[in-house]
Amino acid sequence: MNLQKTDSNNSFDYFQKPEKLHRNGSQLLQQATSKFGLKRSFTTKASTKNNRSSPQPRISNSTTVPRVQSENTSHVPGKNRQRLSKVNMKHKQPEYYRAFLSHVAAELKKRMILSKRIKNDIEYNNVFDGKEAVDRLKEILCTTDPILALRVGRTLEAQRFFHDVNYENRLVDNIIEIYQFNSDLMFHGYHRNDSNSSTGGTSISSGPTAHGSEDECSYYEEDEDDQASCSTSPTLSQQEGLLLPNGVYTELTSCYSPTSYTHEIEKHQPLWSSYIDDYVLFSISALERRRQETIFELIYTEESFLGDLKYMWIEPLKNSDVIPAKRRDIFIDQVFSNIKEVYEISSRLTMALKARQLQHPIVLQVSDIMDQFLDEFEPFVHYGSRQHQAKHTYELEKFNNPRFALFAEQTERHESSRKLELNGYLTKPTTRLGRYTLLLDKIYDRTEAGHPDKENIPDIIASIKNYLQKVNNETGKAKNRFDLQQIHAHLTFKNKRDKIDLKLLDKNRLIIKQGTLRRTASLDSTEYQVILFDHYLVTAKVKVINAVEHYSIRNRPIPIELLGVSLPSVDKGAIQRSSST
Image (cartoon, rainbow, N blue to C red; front, side, top):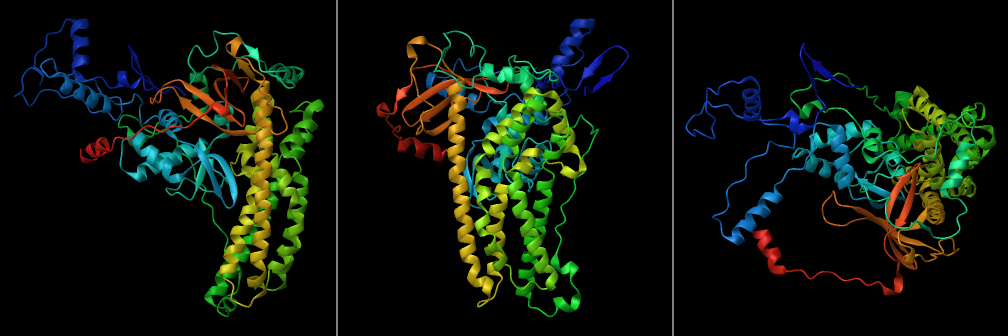
């Protein structure tokens, strides 16, 4: 939406560049003087130091401040002049406007360092914790107020810029809760490529490709109803406009009025005590009350989990032509995998827990029920191992099939979806295993010694953790195989003389580590994707075409036997001097 304030002669665009929005008074006066032939009737502070009533430039909320003329340092000795230039460079302000959510989001994405974390015994890749997010936002917003940074972060979160890994909690300023950027950002390859990334050099394939980009294009070109094309993806600026949050954070600007607001629905957790008569509550100890509350949470969250599985879109997709019939079953199998098996297990577990709950207001035992279902959790492992491919297939379909993208958006906005995207529901089976261990551990802590639950729950938790370890192992193996296939299918060499067969499809091939490396320390410098295989180190430029990452190797791969690690020597004196300043 283009918001403009218009008068009879001209218009003013609120979204023009910040440096145009925040000119100082002398620049405006100079333009008026030259245009209308006016005389200057006053002197500024620059010309008359004692004139305290001279007009002052208005302070801007933008981090792009009006440029100040540099001091004349010609008389300063060489070393001091260098020191002054370093100080000036150190305090140079980045060019973004902190009230624009798109600017803040872009800066946050650039500055955030993603890593691997474990939560509830489940391993997550490319994530960050809440404290890291708030700290980076404080830097971006040039503030020391963590509350302001938290509010801005939650505003970005509300526009699905990032989310809690379990799609449950809002942004919290601590190191316990972990978050990841929206899959659209990760999927569309948010890379800052230079203009020459796709030109120059000979494009040589790394080997025979079974599933190349041409196959992917023809896969969608066969759809008569879809209008997808195999053209190059939008430019970086276009991708930013499509994927980044937008809007103005009114608290950070004094010249903008809010035109919209959002309704936030608070999650009200039901309590066991609200369903039980008072005489029952007063007949048990405080410890038993807390135990019953946790058992109640185990039961109602299992029922909620079952409801989430019912929502999984499968029937609407089967009964519509959003996806062409010839590949509809393949898509459903790749995205939803064995979700029906998981649904059947959860359905029987819910029935067993509800039946126990109906026997008596105070649930006497739950460990015996959980123990009966331990041998049935194997389908959770198979489901979790296919999640990486499922998300890729889902995002690729959204990118290439406009009808499915519209269907997904309408479904996600429906009241029954609770404003969660499908990816949020696809992760439910895996995260549910982790929730079992968390709830059972709380029940164990609130159970008195000698109770059957006190004796049985530790073994049940250990068994579930074994399943979680299997999920992590199988997920890692499946992701490794899938990523190797994708790199192999979309790998080229810039120079013909550097071409070698990397044998990425070998059975035992591994990706040990991969990540982004910048040419210099500047955040705007050219990015390279560095991939360490178990036999070679590869440096490539990544370009996104049709929502698929294509890797162009710039230099000859380095055999792992020739690699070494060296750390720069640390000048202790320099550290002491810097700490004393």
